[in-house]
Image 1 (cartoon, rainbow, N blue to C red):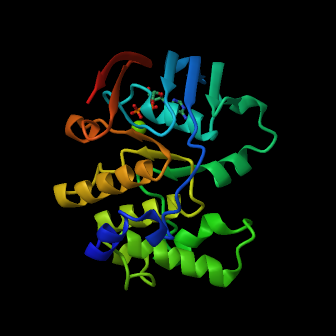
Image 2: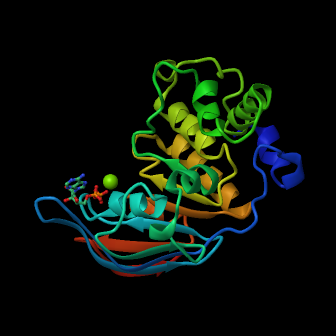
Length: 244
Ligand SMILES: Nc1ncnc2c1ncn2[C@@H]1O[C@H](COP(=O)(O)OP(=O)(O)O)[C@@H](O)[C@H]1O
Ligand SMILES: [Mg+2]
């Protein structure tokens, strides 16, 4: 983040790109299982309550079910049994899950999943299609968000022309496009050096301070420790908790 962005974030009104959200949701999993074909048990019964407006890390070894859990909360996948409630609403009852994802959720994927043929700006604009914003408004907001993640001047670059840390920040800018109440990030710092990692974690903290619930999956303990609460998973279950 640039110095300008950093100073102005103390005044939320001065950072139009990072709109204060209201109504950060709670996230509740009730006895959730997810069994993939072939009887692969990714989640073996997870019960978890995440308070609104908190920054929570979910950690645990590779294969323990972290990504599966995040996908269920994002409404990309559905539980085999049990319920996932976001803001009190059982996601299984949503008539239009894609609308929930677009309007409520910002998702930062493990490998950022930027579209390679689109510029950084166009990648950030994507989630804004269908939200009633004009092309000028989309462009303006994309540029604001890219400035917020310290990428002003690089709006026209393709993902291949950006470093790993820069690509990850484009992915974060894209996740913030529609001012999500719930930010979900899957190993967002996995490929980053410590400077880039710190920038990303600072961003998540800012998003949380602007009133969103943030859930970050990571297998790195020092990264997890930057959250408010660490939920430890193993073999598809929650096995421990630490308040940090
Ligand atoms: N689409 C899928 N089909 C079958 N098995 C899967 C699928 N996705 C994940 N799994 C399996 O579910 C388990 C949990 O995976 P995942 O949630 O990706 O773990 P983590 O993110 O903690 O590494 C692993 O054993 C993985 O191989
Ligand atoms: Mg994973």
